[in-house]
Figure (cartoon, rainbow, N blue to C red):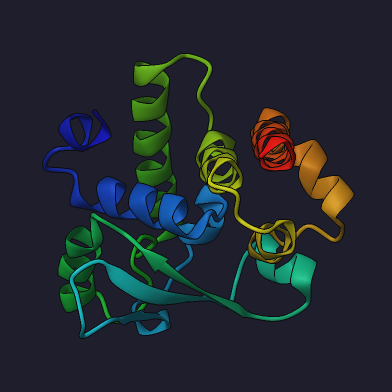
Length: 173
């Protein structure tokens, strides 16, 4: 659905897919530099992204890297060929325009979707796939598991419920 709505808008597609794949804030992903994205030579979807700017870096007190799979990495690679510095903010006003386009697409899909829906949704999906809480906490940058659980809202609770159900079934057998 997003791919169709963003067809032809390579910047918005790349930004949105990088934010989703790294479970980062949309505004943090908008500050990515080409030199901070290492694309795997083994496949067309794996990369390591190093964040050096943004709220996530400020919260951690240092730059951090995330290895991820991004099915729309080809859009980012196209931008990387022509933009050696920042991918999405050649100027501050240009960056704001790209962010606005992405936010408008999200609203067109569901009026309740916001920029933070990308990060939270990615983390909730990982939680539902039973990703370890400490791994999720590290990815999200939350200071404690309790804060992460509060942020995740329903996602982690669903994963914990599923884990408890599986444990109960194992006890029965």
